Image (cartoon, rainbow, N blue to C red; front, side):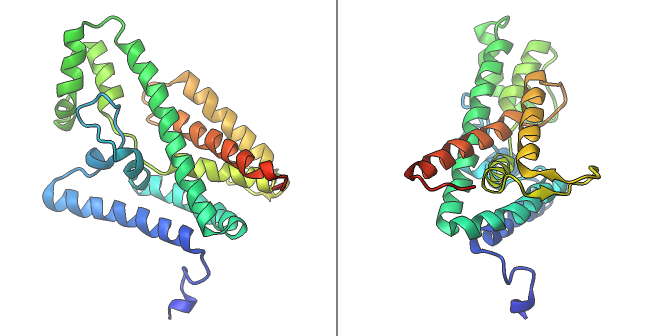
Amino acid sequence: MFKNSFFANMPPVVKNLLLINASVLLLSYIIETTFHIDISSKIGLYFFKSSAFKPFQIVTHMFMHANFMHLFFNMYALWIFGQILERVWGPKRFFIYYIATGLGAAILHSLVNYFQVINATELMTSEQINTVLKEGFSVIQQGKNYIDPQMAKLNLLANIPTVGASGAVFGILLAFGMLFPNTELFLMFIPIPIKAKYFVIGYGLIELFSGIANRQGDNVAHFAHLGGMIFGFILIKIWSRNGKTFY
């Protein structure tokens, strides 16, 4: 029975990543419904000076998703492109690449988050800043925020968790574009095929412009996506220094 299943011919790392990510979201629904505990507030990545920050979140946030659609699109891209990369690189190298780009995404996101916090605190007193960093998490957990606009802005920056495998997935898209630049992709809503290299470049530029624009209410970690692509590019270049070309 298992030999004919969906997972039968799937490489091991992609298969296990799909299972882990899906299981974490399902488990979070069960725990939240049964015990009223928000798992994303425990394993999501917070600003490093927030009272809610824990070092392990740098890794765990990659396996938690906001909702089913967030999970679906990330895992669909992992399934489509990740299988190809794992078969080319092998399980060990693919796993290292996936984790490295996910961590790279967290690093760039946290760095940008740090400068956003600095900008938000320019007109605030030290007392206001300390209040938000120490008590803001519990305020958010109650579904509330501060009346003062600067305190409210800082609270959202510091005490809303970042979750998802998007950074690693964008790293995978970058790798596919570098390894198979002339492969033509047929994308939803685009009636003509587009080469992988142009798709990756275009997507990267969209994320860059979106991150710089920093639209209010966007709720997307654009610089985490870029971080996954940047660290992926660096890692591939390091691996290819022995003269072996990838494409």
